[in-house]
Each structure stands twice: as structure tokens, then as C-alpha cells.
Image 1 (cartoon, rainbow, N blue to C red):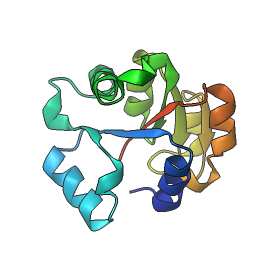
Image 2: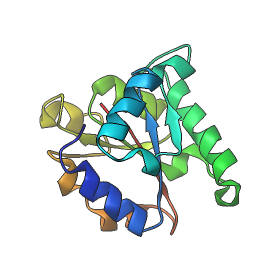
Image 3: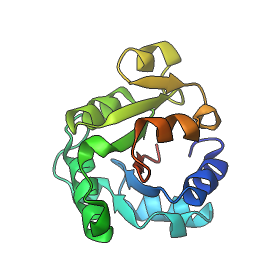
Image 4: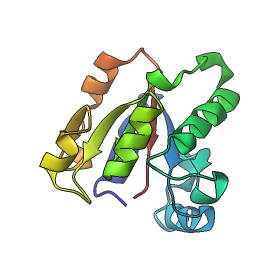
Length: 149
């Protein structure tokens, strides 16, 4: 889990943005981590490794998340290019970009300079991700797509 994730989720929820998880991890493990961290209620949409036949850097997981978000929130008429992926791996950045999403790299797993080369913008820590910047880029109700790795 990202350091500062609970504060970040609070900011997202208070701004009425939508969240999803796209991860190569199996669903059972994702749900276990979310329950232990008391964050499960905030993620209606989870695309786990056992939901798709291909993994990152293929975009299938992100595209499935968009479809599930469309079903859950049809009033948004959501398109992939209206979503922001928060990633900490190079394959994850590539997958989100292949799905036509903008990507914030978080230097959890890879050094800042490596993620910076591929992501639209990069931060050292999730706590540095400014909600105001996200809102400037997207419409009033953007969707944030995030990973748990």
C-alpha cells in the first residue's frame, strides 16, 4: 500500500471522485489488504489479476475498469481518456497509457527518474499528488483509477 493512501482517499471521496483498483494481484489478496486497512468500502470497482487474461503492460485491466465504472456510474458516460491512473511500476504506466489514460507515477517501486520518463507527471509520495492539479486537468467529476501495488 502507498504511504498516505488513507488521507488521499479521504480527499478523493470528499471531492466526489470515483475510485477503482487495477492490479495484477489476485482478488482475494486485494480484498484482504483493503479490509485490514479499513479501506474496502471505498473501492466498489476492483479489477484483479484473476479478472483478465493478460497482464500489464497490456491495457486490458484498465479498459475493464472503465467498463465497470460505466456500469456503476452510467451518468458519467465515462471514457478512458477521462481517467487518471496512479501507478508505481513501468508496466503499469505502459498499460494505462495504452488504455488512453493519463498517468501519475509514484516513486514507490521504481526511482523517480525512471517513472518520470514514461508518466505524464511523477511524485515521490502519494501525499504530494495535488487534487487541485487533477481537477484542473479533468472535468468536474473525473475518475481516479489507482493500483494497490
